[in-house]
Amino acid sequence: MSDSDSTTLDQLDRKIILATQSGLPLVASPYQAIAEAVDSSEKEVMRRMQRMLESGVIRRIGAVPNHYSLGYRGNGMTVWDIPDEKVESCGEMIGSLSFVSHAYERPRHQPEWNYNLFAMVHGKDRDEVAHKVALIADLLGEDNRGHEILYSSRILKKTGLRLASDK
Image 1 (tube, rainbow, N blue to C red):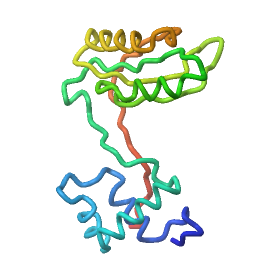
Image 2 (tube, rainbow, N blue to C red):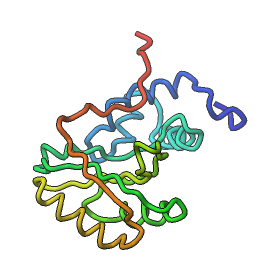
Image 3 (cartoon, rainbow, N blue to C red):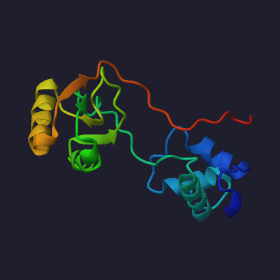
Image 4 (spheres, rainbow, N blue to C red):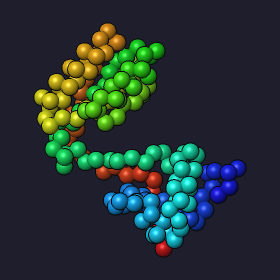
């Protein structure tokens, strides 16, 4: 893969994706384990994964915890009606809270859907989530023009990039 064509995947890139598409190995040196699996060096695996991140082939590398198995069963996606000019700063503030796993802007679909900021709030039960949402509402003050909590009813399997095996 040359710098001029950073989205072209060669055979080693494909091997790296296949080796990581179910997650990074849960070992002390995951990139070394991947390197051994694809017959490369740790440095080369890291370089290629960084390039794939920068080009958008890989969107992100991060932990995806199963909140239910950790005892957080009251999880709720909160949706907020925030002034458009403040949605980015409000999202950053909410996203930095320890009980929020992610916050992001989404387009409104008016008149049915006025919400433009989504944030996943985690709690042991729905009462704890409701309490945390009230804290967020207080933090937002007048920028909170309305919100709802959409509680999880089931666990959806989260997967990332998938390539068919060459085998």
